[in-house]
Length: 97
Image (cartoon, rainbow, N blue to C red; front, side, top):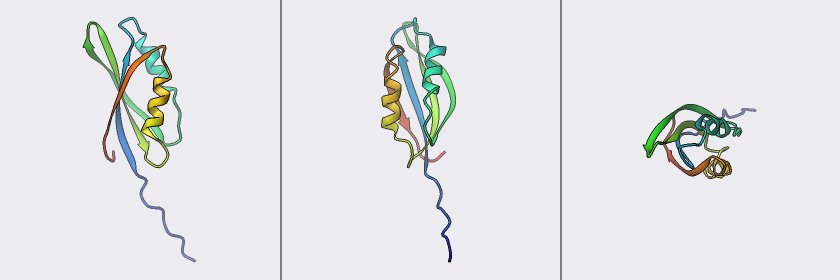
């Protein structure tokens, strides 16, 4: 009996832009709570703070998701659930890493 080898795992790179409520939001803590999201098939990557104006910076963070295991929409809901920190969220989806 021949067992077929599994095919390649489809993955996508995602860049998340997470904006705080104001310039007084603790950005280190916001990144910490975003990274606390653990899902099978989700791997967090590099991050940086990007100025958006009026002293406010957004958290730009990369992640790689296994397409069959992680829904970007579900990830968005989890991030937006941190409403003490997050006022706005957007993502850019790219192909295989």
